[in-house]
Length: 189
Image (cartoon, rainbow, N blue to C red):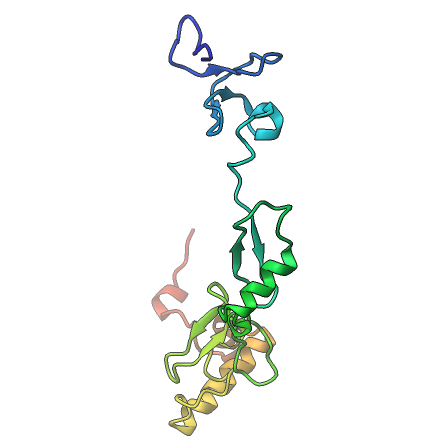
């Protein structure tokens, strides 16, 4: 049993049970193999030479086709990875189609759709990447209802591509930001 804490704070931290260390650690690690307390330098089974570590570890083999993790049932030296993978394929749980992520349906776009870079179009309901999130950018079938709306969406997409924003467009048109006459004629001394 390790000594706990200091004289002033007996419940704070613990001394490392490694005979050569005995360091006071305020965030000690309890070994689930031997039940002793260790500092950060001796927390792994290998670092403190735990005798009960051999039966504690679980290892898995990852299937390159479907991405499943298959747990080893025997000791690592008794069963090769190739045998484990062959048994996985024979069990018919290996489905390579599960590993591939869906791609963006926009023309000539190969961006994989993940949780963080995809959105669903409100008009057509298709899941597209963030580059093609606007209806005009992915050839939306739901937004093509009116020709005027399609032209406006195409013009907006062209402005976005050209770097023009709405505020610059209003200033350039000449009338968007006119002040009332009372404010224009106000003189401050």
